[in-house]
Image 1: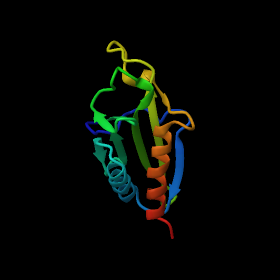
Image 2: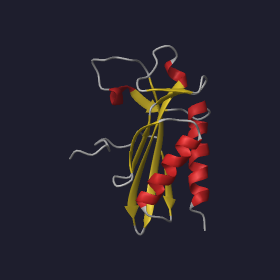
Image 3: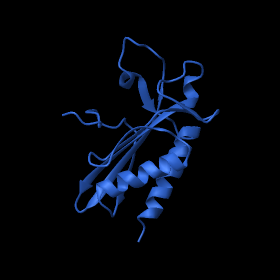
Image 4: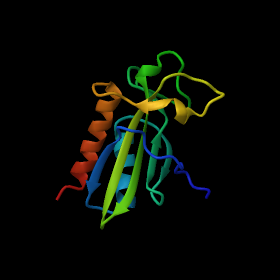
Length: 137
C-alpha cells in the first residue's frame, strides 16, 4: 500500500471517541495536540487518519525513535487512528508501554496499553480532552 498507517489494530484497552468532524480534520487536530503536549511525531497522515509519536519518557520528557532500555515502564508511544463512521469520526487512541527491547521480535508483539494511573495514560487523556473540546458543539 505504501502508506504510513500500520496494518495492525489498536491494542486491547484503547480509548474510543466519536467526534462530529471529518477524519482528516480530527487527525490534524490530534497531531497538533500531541505536539502541544511536548511529544514528537514519528508518523502523520491526515489522508490515512493516523498519528504516531516517537517513544516518550514521561519522567524526563524526552523523545526517542527507539524505546530507551533503562526504565521501559516510563517510556510510552501514542497512536491515534481516525476512521469515518456514519458522518462522524471514530477516534481510537492507544498509549503503549513495552515490556522489553528484543531486536529479534517486532515491537508490536511486546506492547501493551499503559495501565490506568500511568503518567502516559494521563497524558493521553489530556490530549484527547483537548481534541474533544475542539469539536464540541
